[in-house]
Image (cartoon, rainbow, N blue to C red; front, side):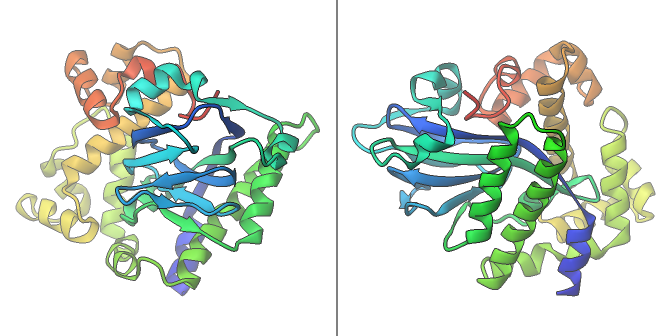
Amino acid sequence: MEDYNKIIEALNVNFKNANNIRITQPITIENYYDVDNTIIRLNSGEIKYGKEKTLVPKGHFLFIPGGKNVSVTFGTGSVVSLSNDDFISRKESYFESIDADQTKNENIESFTFVNFEAKVFDSVNFFASLDIPPFVISNSERINTVMDMIINEKNSTIPGQERIIKYATDILVVGLIRYVLKNQLFVEQLATNITYFKDPRLIDIFAYIKENLDGDLSNKKLASVANVSEDYVGQYFKMLTGINPQDYIEYQRMERAVSLLRTTKKSIREIGSEVGYKDTAYFCRRFKMMFGIPAGKMRRRESLMNV
């Protein structure tokens, strides 16, 4: 457990968004995707996920790691199936924000969600790096309490709001990790993927990539950072992480692009250049391929469920 303590200490957690949502029309989002992690509590009604349409029991939680593409059905009755792209264009037709009191109304199908980022050494998306699938969390009073705290503070104007949200989101992330460990979930994935956080050469590569997304990130450059041969660096990286370095680099570039789209008014051309794409058209094609929506539509929302 000492390794997990070190990783938790190295985690940089950032709150992104939270809300109570009423399902006004049942919908299946065929390829739900978000770069941030999402935890959803079902207050009433139904939520199903995955190819098997696994049911999330009332009062339980669905956790979707950032970067995971999954089918999610919200609500009961006649369901409309939409792609991620189509849903974003029309989400107000299916979801609406409600206050906390309305989530207790059994006649209203609703859920509560929190989006957050969790990175190790401020460079690696922790839950995505573990390669774990979406899963249901049951019987966690702590997670329930913390989600309510986050929602209450988000809707508050009392001084100290941001600090309490930061504190509560930290507790939420630790609670998720403890739940996985306590219930011995994803044992093989954890045993395989947790090891690379211990390798200082790999951490140096992660840090270099983060600081040089607009620069030379060839295998030759990465080999010099890790002090290994150019022929070996790709094999070395994939052996420890399960992916080749260029795929990891593209994911980091696109994740940074999403952040810039959400938080700045820079043009898509400027953002593409800032994350290492000199050809704007190619950047837009790769963005659409990875996220399922054009870069311009990503700019118009903070999260899929922000209504």
